[in-house]
Image 1 (cartoon, rainbow, N blue to C red):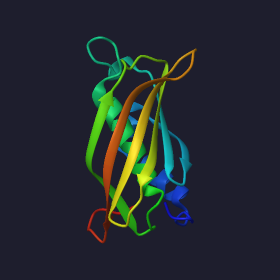
Image 2 (spheres, rainbow, N blue to C red):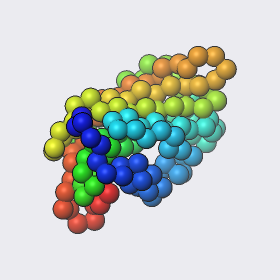
Image 3 (cartoon, rainbow, N blue to C red):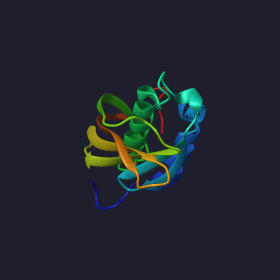
Image 4 (spheres, helix red, strand yellow):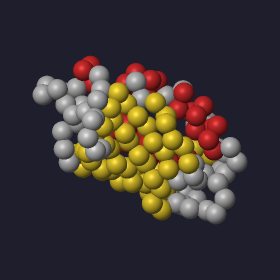
Length: 149
């Protein structure tokens, strides 16, 4: 990551996240925005489960993708944006909890391609339980019509 974060990345990410209808639909909340790291929380909702009552893998993947994408967003210039071009998710444990935390962290910043790693945790009364991990590749987008911060 660069030594200095881009100007007002927190405000740009907060505004961008507010425009994400998919995150709103699943009830996700932006809870931490720092240079290189973003966290998203999600309450358990039965409407987001699969047939066994666990948080659906697609929901887990979407939240991790957003956390990793916004982590990448913290290290780019204000005139650029981010699009995911690839990710791999490992589902390690059933998505069972009262809340879920999805953390994205920049692993390798770059001017065109950024790699970020994500971790998903189930939260209940005990310690947080790791349920998923992701490695994502993000493309920095500049000057493309219809794609802005």
